[in-house]
Image (cartoon, rainbow, N blue to C red; front, side, top):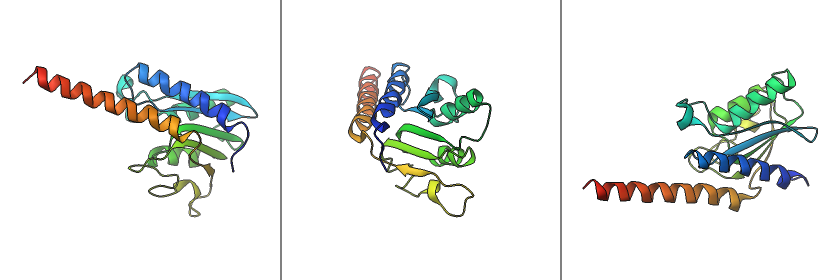
Length: 162
């Protein structure tokens, strides 16, 4: 169920996504909130760090665990601009995040309801509340514009090398 502050914190996640884009990373951002305080924030750094696990969600969760001094984030809400992938959904479950709010749906890798819903699978010992589509258009536009620009650059590069 959507809460009043969901837009406010999604705007923070969008700011993180813009930081990723400035670094030529896929523009995905995440923040972790506990009791109205942002305890973790991050953006994608896979290309920069050359680490497959440098997803915004994992980095934000890691920062939140360090800041709180606990791997259990039972009172936390994770805000992320794109629906979590299987790896991130697993991390959300393992860190006991209470609630996940995401922007754009991911038809190719979404595991919070699109391809499957790992976050609410009763076979796990933890389930997270899921709210999808918060500021979906804005979050989706960041990704669409990024990939459109990337394809245009690749096309231009092919023409100059032909």
